[in-house]
Length: 279
Length: 279
Image (cartoon, rainbow over all chains, first blue to last red):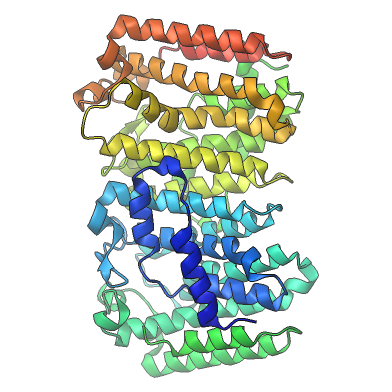
């Protein structure tokens, strides 16, 4: 069992050494730029930690784990575009379109999604790629709600938005690990519950940070959600109640993990990191 | 063995009845709009005709065949965006962004690519989705060359551009049919040669039509390539020589088909349609 930090280093190495499809030509530069911009790699680390709990070797899980990071990066590149969130700053650096122009950023996003599928298809079973595709479709549906919800979302609407936009790609690491490990549907239930709660926790913390963090800490423009009139857990419930909701979600997650008969120590640690992160 | 027109009707029915992922919500409207805009369905028809020549049932091939049409539609939706080709007209109708706005068009294109993979992943083998993913990556590489080649391409550069941008998705129907039929790599060679030549033929004819057609005939803005200073088979060789190159490609394709021990009558008919099309 490796620590989350050890797993993160494996992910960084894999992404650094990843050979993108040569036919992408110079577009690979923009893809690499977006991919190697120093994210926290929470999703692939989650995938590797889940795989280890399921007694799958890290080496065998790396492609599937990193395929999720590619989809995540694709979503950021397109979300940052002027027509969508219009954000010139990402992870403390110029976002893809700010550096390479809109046309290249659109194609780089497309390439990231297709490359992600290529990695997920390195396995003998189509199940890994199915998990990734379903998660991608849900995430895209969430992005659509996000950019088109002109009326203020209520509490239920907010939960649905984040179940799709954030939750799907945070659940995908667990889904992909279950697919690689070949866990039967009957045995998947506690894992799936864990995965769903994780997305909720992540989003509440994200909203709290957006309301309280600085650009330097976050590496992106803070306070954008409230300025854009977006409903968040903070605008809806206030900062103290939002923090309490995050703690409640963490408690439910830890209870769920405790019921799974496997070594989930790294997963506990990741959950703690998600709750306590400051950036 | 069905005629190309019979196969086209099967494709239309399948696409009309296709249930998109419900989590896409209202985004499905923009996806449907782009998908059901009345294309010629050359790629899925090619896939079905190839499958029948390989003794695969049409019903079993429809998902794979239509997955290619979804990738093709994805490429058109993103290619039409203001940051890329900036075309407000597609198949005689407002293009996706002209009707729904840029943000929705970007997400609709993303959804089309992901839905395409979902269809390709309905098969027991990952091989179908691999063919589709490889073709998509090549096509994206071709788009990149197309939007960034500031210096005039020479004849070799033009061939490479089209091998990727147009050729990959015209070869994919054959690749996907070979995957569904489970044809061994050794037996694939003549099919792959046929597939590669087909893309070349299609592109030369496209360039001739762009130089000679009207908006009414084409359902899109004609003469754009030359106006944009793009190198085409017509700007490079003149209209008469371009037509001769198309006829030469057709002859090579028919020779290749004649050497394949299967009923390729529908494929002959499709090749003739590609050469003789006026729109």
